[in-house]
Image (cartoon, rainbow, N blue to C red):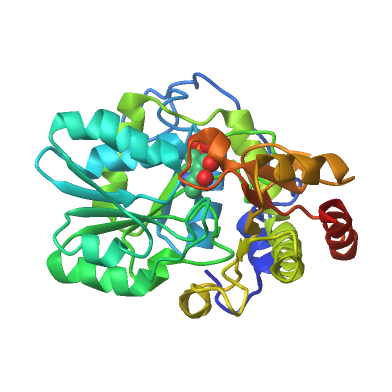
Length: 367
Ligand SMILES: Cc1ncc(COP(=O)(O)O)c(C=O)c1O
């Protein structure tokens, strides 16, 4: 990607259409199950909605540019993208490392579907990732890890994987390609949910895989065609439309997260805060080395579940909802979903509200 450009320029350029006089400047949605066939069977044109769609391709080329990959493939959800990558890479007999402190459904998939098929599944926290991956064949790392926001040293892990020919897959959902580019740190594959900050409006579910490894991408495209977890044309268009403002939104979300983390850090009602951008955070050093922005999520620990519930009730701006990356600031008490965290642990996803309004609102709601 044009390395000299800032995030908003990159976002806008990524979704720019060709300068053809008379054609729409904005991308147009193509929602089609079937296409007119050519008599020339080798023409390589679109034929059927599960194998190809012009809106996917436009979105995929934007995502590839943002991730610094040669190609990207969209999927019906982040989980569809991650599980497709794992099915292609983790064959019976291989050792797969997955995050112990990352998105819980990925662990479930690995233990419920891959382990019974002969994949040796090992769970490791962000902190243990390098050590646990020393003899792995495939490593899936998530950084910052959802929900605890610990950070994996991606360059170190990538070099370790390279030395022994292991494949490193990085879930870039929480950081987004505007926050970090794992491929430039040596990862082989990026997987992500586009449901979160990239689309950013909490109104669709989507995912993608990006890589510069042509062999892996063609295996993944084949997998997508056969397994069929494809993104609808309209959703693809919505992600594309949203990408143009991703730089602006993400900049504000990160600014809000940093300001909130600073306030929470000294608030007497708060037991602990994690935010990779906080100078005292244990992950700050590694985060500074590999992240361009520290993301829009803050992890906070209050006294108990009632304290989290009271925070939302007394606030005029916070929304109680799961997921993250949307324009509204939202709070998710993660013990509800079974994450190994205390009852008072909440992941706060910062929206694009004015920073002063948000910090003042949360401060009064905690008082
Ligand atoms: C880090 C991470 N990866 C992947 C996913 C799955 O994404 P999706 O819900 O789009 O399937 C999530 C969902 O919350 C996530 O937090």
